[in-house]
Length: 256
Image 1 (cartoon, rainbow, N blue to C red):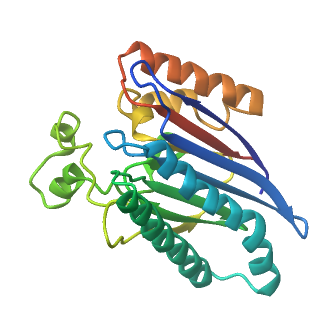
Image 2 (tube, one colour):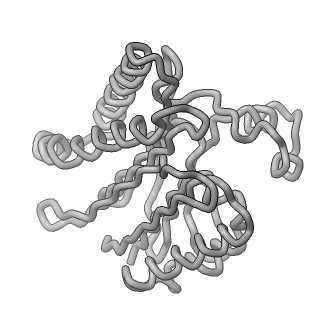
């Protein structure tokens, strides 16, 4: 697999600080290309949300730089990856929570990280950022929101249509730093050629439809990093024009 990637983050039209953090890297190991991306969305209503998101993102960035090469040399497996990522997430949950307690702050952040290796992708997910797969004529959501609204949908108490305007869609059931325990999702799937993978904060998707994602952010329409940056910037400008008040962040990974 070969990859092209780009990302854009914007503070938005209302907030003074950008509490979103995003990292991506393209690399090669023994002639095989791989890609890695992480997004963390600090809790907008909490103080120092940007500190929480930056802390967690830096830890997962350092894991990629320092630990992943060791794992690849020693013998990679999905189970080992899951264990390592869970340990990192649990440690960060405790670290952020302890810092907040000592300093009498409310801090928290979501976490979504994805590794694209061989013909598989691996995802760890806590919160309501999303990873989408954009291919052919459809947009598939690969992550599951940890929100009150999504729980109501899962329980058959709310329709997906009504969920679009539900006032509880911003209420998280779990995030790093705001509770004693977390239960991250771990997702494994098959990478598809000529496909785009969109990783975004909730501020990006609220006012940008899946039809628009399919039209503007498909693999064929994003053959270079420059074009990816342009299309993501255009999308964010459109979202701001529609009145989105949250921070807006997105990264696009194209498989070629």
